[in-house]
Image (cartoon, rainbow, N blue to C red; front, side, top):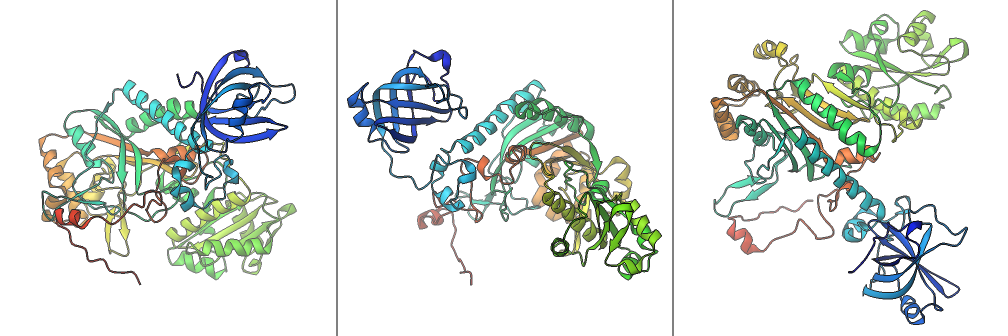
Length: 593
């Protein structure tokens, strides 16, 4: 037997036992001839002791040990001397007096400080990814991956006890570019033709509902060729599900139970009923369709008041069908002029042409740089409309509804960051519902689906859509939001082939284009499709957000960098010309200037 216990297992009740441990040398210390080694594996650390008086030969070998050597030790568990206990580790009450030592493998001096805690890791990302197998030895990254593994186990158990079948869908599929770019795979046996790697299993899971599978789920690999950021990777994992004979509330209720029975259980928090917020209300009150509810900084529309003041900026914006939005920054009356200037520049990044501020002083007196354009009653009305009190700073942004909402939403988040209101230990979930079914693209000069073209309109909005009024049509779409991060989204799907055909027509797709892109999918609906809906959660994003982290990279074993490449194995890479020949591909790569 290579080992009797792991390195996070031994306790006081093991004192006197003969044990064998295996692992990596985390730290080695020589104190007056006695060598202390912290032995590490994924379960934890145990201190082992080499005393020359106990075994001189073993002590001599131990003197050669260095960080990251892989070893096996055998010895007796003993209590640490009084006052020498280590409360920071689970095995801190004991150590192991060693009488046998085997070195399985030596290690060169590692380019990463494996035993550094997360906050002390200073290496750049590419160095970490180049030596990712060393980076993965770090206990805090191993904890992330084990946490994700635990979530996967509980996820499988949850869906199985709720009658879902785990069914795999193809990884090589047809390219139907409607969202991000597809990753393409050439076909050797079909010259000039390509598979696409799935951006999601969307069409296949709908086909499974048509096939009568009723409840499907899958831990699905997805691929999107898009620009990367902290919460995006070219390949990622979804918890994917679909249900037949359901309405929107049924799908959301299933996910409510998933949050309560799986996420709350693993992370140890209590959750009340998840609030449901309409998209329009979220954009008004929080300036975002993924509102962060951990702090109370609501946004208010004050356009009606602003329309009747002498301040030209407000009055002209409202006259031109724009809006004025405001919020009361609680306890921020002491913001300096520099802080205000910085916030003005900040909202400018989101299209705002200015930021009007007002201080509410003791006695509710209001100080502002634009006081001469307002009567005292108007200033008081603005203050009261957004809930301002003594000690608050009031901010207002005027512009188009889209710009005012977006800029004010980001200002709300920035103030929360400044005031340290984003407690990572607080988890606030929300459902956002009734999204617009279509959104207008200024660059393409046409409407496109806000989610995807298989999303069903609200029943009461079907006639609105059929009349061609795409601007006002709302969808049976819903996003699950956690702490200002969209962790999942879904919709009730169109199951009527006539309505699906109408949606394609409204999106400007010709009959030939529909047949080329979605022919197999549309054909299936002619043979009886049940009402159905579903949702997908971003697995890595769920874990990262619940852990209070912005980046999903440390929750993926072998992620890519911001250039969508892997410094460890140098992928993507050039291939043998013979492989290109076999797949009927010739290259004409232009060099970037």
